[in-house]
Length: 628
Image 1 (tube, rainbow, N blue to C red):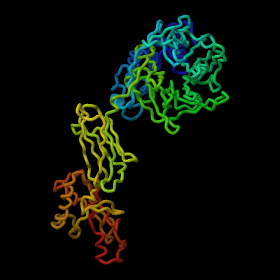
Image 2 (image 1 turned 45 degrees about the vertical axis):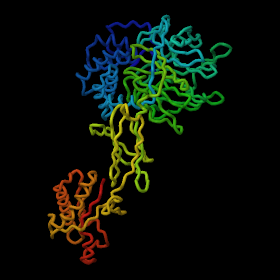
Image 3 (image 1 turned 90 degrees about the horizontal axis):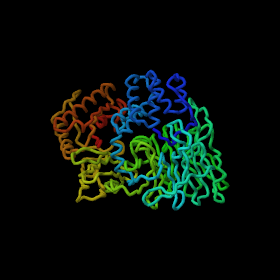
Image 4 (image 1 turned 180 degrees about the horizontal axis):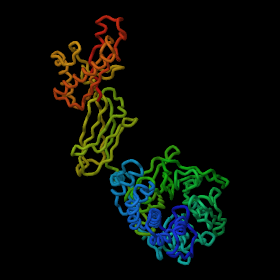
């Protein structure tokens, strides 16, 4: 979804065109390819509603943020031509549905698109609990405000922003709004813009200008400008965007030049400077992207030259649009994306830089992101203030914000899992978070430090349960209610079955086993004899004592007799043993039976005729290995 800002390459320089409804479909498609979406939609509305017309009409509405008409037309398209529609229409239809918060229907299309289940409401609930900050937004007021966006810090008392307020500017064919210019103003403590002035003609031209960023000394500016000529790119003939640099010399902006890595064949846009001003971040659809616009960085050398642009990689970038980067003084990357899961349209994300690489992005949550486009986020972290733009009110508006720590992130439970005797960390232990109805909400494995952490809600009761293979589980309850704590540290010291019971031993090759007296079967029989039952009752007692214990019952033979016969006999005896345990009240889900025949001897008796009966007898056995 787009408004009058140019967030995709290809803002057009088409004006003064008088298109009538008599235009044929080929001519209308040309308008669509040129991204004159408002003109194209008006004429598509008069045409026979075949698949091509419905697709282009729905997209024209979508790209002009006419959400209700886009939804209606996409729905008609899917009803009429559902089996033959390209998968990308599922994505755009879903984004339009998100624009009016129809998340369940949107999730159906996103699940088809990503070929995995998508649950946006669950994502929203979790994000609002885990995002680091919450934001108090207040709209920035301005006389003659019209499509203002992209506010940036200019100097101590001033700001810069882009606006379509210049009614003398030619109309932009995408949405019939004036072209964008850059302005400077004073922002009062009441969030009002005063003393608004356009930048001089050296900066503002008859094309689009926006996204200004300044060096700390105020003497260098980087900004966007749309090309005055269009270039054929794929099926589209569009005017790409370049990043320009300007210098403030003797009270005037001069030396306005495009950066050397800009091009007439692709766009570079939305510049952002690192704290040391040695790196420029920007968005581009240059060759090598993951599909649409990606976030890049480029070195600014001491002599004023530039290095080679470097894509930030697929942790940050997706096959869809990533734009409007901002790098904070704490080296936190903020950017807008429609490709990462979000609330709808462009959402603002953050990513911390760790060891010269950016971590998985985190959505900033519903206090700043909406179901439509949210973008051009900048923050002054030391003051916890900043600006963001959004079209959630129907057109582009700028907002000032104050950010605070998200109180919900304070509610959490964490700890470690260790062996009670050795203090050894039990890595990959299972830790479950359980609500007061007994439902497992989350189930995670402890990390390389034996640690776990859960975010929890206030005013609720929970239990955490830790388990590890061949260990006795532990369970602890806690509350986040009015009388409960905000932060809980619950660590577990688990006792292994082998330390708890003399009959349980650990072997190097056979794992942790319950050692029982030998079980005997009659010749060529599988039924449980009375003496075998007495032995198995010892295992029954242990499994009832430890309800979490899971056991594999295995049966083995010696090598005498045919291989297949021995294998089948061992399987039948193991299954018979399992059935006896079930008959004594052990849940079948806690048991597994396996017959190994003669494949796992305990001694050298691997051929017939080389051992005594007593030696062969060692391999005829049942074993009871603890699985959990």
